[in-house]
Image 1 (tube, helix red, strand yellow):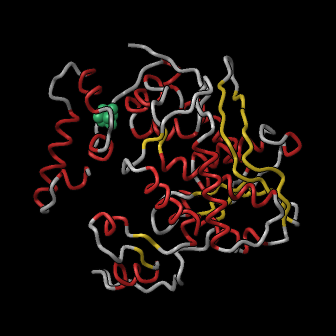
Image 2: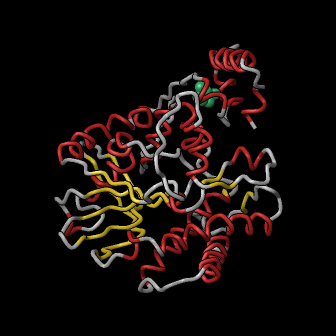
Length: 349
Ligand code: SF4
């Protein structure tokens, strides 16, 4: 079976290929047309829209009610905007089957992040100008036939010092800390920074190496213990300080207490890629997408990939229904978990 995909390629495709080429094949090449929209993705798009509109409106001071209204309005626009190539509006997959309840919970979680952003020095400072927001870009990477990459950059700023800064806003849950190495070598950020450097984002910035900021909006709100929420515990929202004290300070390593304040982190996490890293990334981009170019996708059987894979049945069919390495991996994982008293079903849920 050879099924090529000639792009345009996104950074998320590359990350998908690194997890499992076969899974990325199912996701991107076979099931390219989604039947539903994901509600968490809508929440992310709505907060991006709020932040862009807030900057465009001259950064007005908002209180929590106004922030909530801005967010509800943005969500409403998102829900009713055609989002299919034929201009149709795809139905939303509501997590609890109850639209109003899901919207209320989403607003409760996201409006405080938006409000906190509007009060943060990184947003309020007068030391920069915004050169563009939510900019869609396309970049051709040689040789022949060329490779087409595309993406969208949340914000491009110019600081008073002349430094160009590329900002990526993250609203999803992630680890409590941001590793500097992962930030400096992030495929997404290097690809975006390269697009900027090549003039694909704003032509007059060609040749400028930007600084990168990953802005974690969840740094600004109390840490949420999702597992505790799932378990039905009432007090599932906690400050990072409390979380840290509970899980690290009193942990077996008796680690040093880090004064994290009431927030999870500083919001803005900076990285300064050297020009040489951008140029070597450009060469790597071509290699990364080779499975798409040649139309062959290797399965990557691993407990982390396979246990959470939505395409296990399709994958099994491709392996002619035989007991595959995937089954082996899953069984191994179940055995290890059983030994530690955890049911596989528990973590699959
Ligand atoms: S089941 Fe495993 S090997 Fe198969 S597609 Fe999914 S992640 Fe890849």
